[in-house]
Image 1: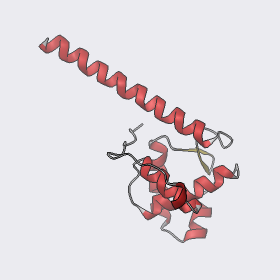
Image 2: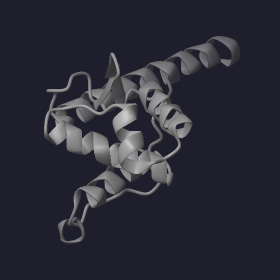
Image 3: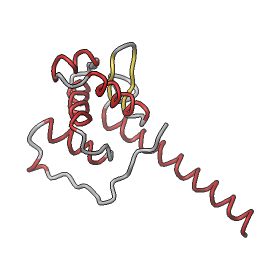
Length: 134
């Protein structure tokens, strides 16, 4: 599993500028460091809509609704899976570990586990450095 990028500058949500699910999905994509890809932002928006309605999405649904390149949809969905943001059961994709898991709970767990792994890696590097150079 790859690490999520942590944005260099803090992102502070401004409630007066959040007027749609698209605004929310763009903000979440920025916070998660997912880049500016329109395909990724579209996928995130649809996954948030599905999460709020406790459903899921399929590549076929995304393709029919958006007419985006099917290979591109698969590529980005696989990338989001590798980051631990998206999970899949059969052909159904969803944010979180389960369809019913609250988004806040999922994101907290995701970042805590990634942070724990990063801290463990740093500890190992420091131990190696101490043994070799200390």
